[in-house]
Length: 94
View 1 (tube, rainbow, N blue to C red):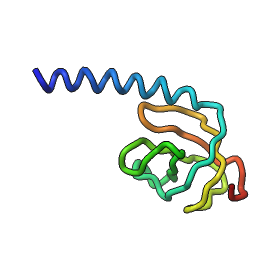
View 2 (spheres, helix red, strand yellow):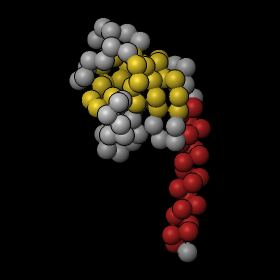
View 3 (tube, rainbow, N blue to C red):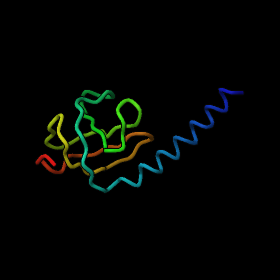
View 4 (cartoon, rainbow, N blue to C red):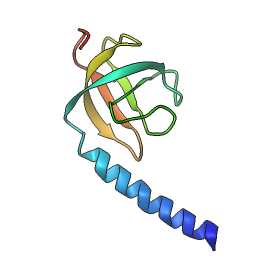
């Protein structure tokens, strides 16, 4: 019973997170670029100011001139259940 309830709650939370993150699509934000993504070595990842390392989702970066370890402006292009996808839109450090 406890596991079934946990699964139900996680599905509800997944939907809430996806809907919340969808509000970021099409907007620009400063992110700190952490490095290569844990999901694929073809992507880089970074974090928005509200995304804590190892706790929250990440911004997966699929395009643009990336400077690892620096803050760069990113256009969010897609929202997933817990992560966002975006592209670097500005080379200069913010």
